[in-house]
Length: 74
Image 1 (cartoon, rainbow, N blue to C red):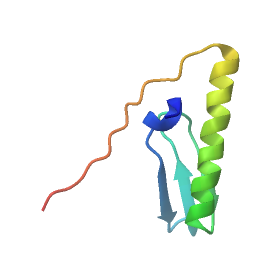
Image 2: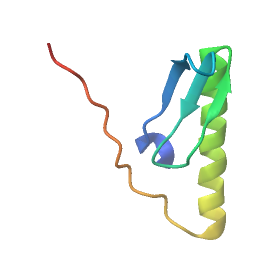
Image 3: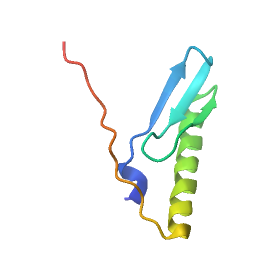
Image 4: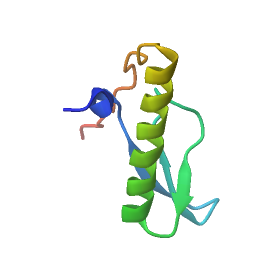
């Protein structure tokens, strides 16, 4: 298990941008985008790995995971 596995990742279609957007809200603002959701998920993981390397290089711990998905129950 990687240290970043605790972070939630989202890949969703954005009607406004007309493409898929991937983001990890507890680790960084912004995200990645593209036409293929699988490629967006791969790029998102690469961005997360890069952020993990930055934290390690700086000698800082990763932030706590605070985002929790919600599910509506009918």
